[in-house]
Image (cartoon, rainbow, N blue to C red; front, side, top):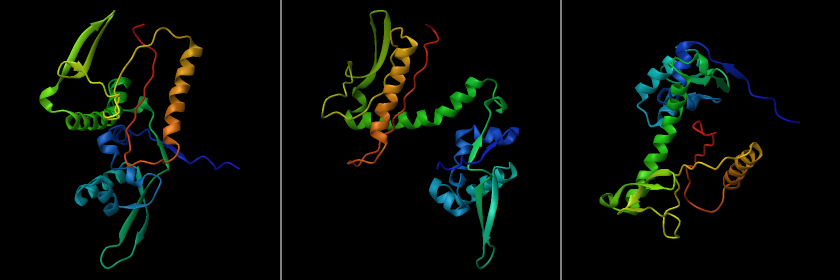
Length: 217
């Protein structure tokens, strides 16, 4: 018998919605999402100052995103234990205080993109001196390409001694819906094969994949 679906609360109040669609603010909620947590524990997990964490907890409580589930007695003031108001929170994009939905989507993804590119930069600097890196711009057929390059040559990362990294955007030839769905499922199967279970190794990898119809086609 399947487990019941976790409760989902729709967040439509402007202040709470604005908080949740801002990745820099939302990270303060994450330690409390679907579990009990104290201010001190949340501060440790996020690497934040305890006073700043307490300010954010009070803010989230005022916004109706957190509730106090219990108080643990001790000498002095009791320790308050907080939890998100539901295991899952849904913010309709139409209720977000952004001029356009595109702005909301860009803000939502900017944090993860910064993380990927910062990690890529660390790998690049470990592989070659900064002075050797540059942007290689060229035309191939009907397309113009811009790639990270080393001494004027594209960075070839496929050799056995090169780091296991990939950052590329391609435009496919025209695909039928059936072929496009096959590509979507193939990409998902490849990811699933490498993320389903822990395997031998010591390094985790950030992998991000996006696939959309070309708006200019």
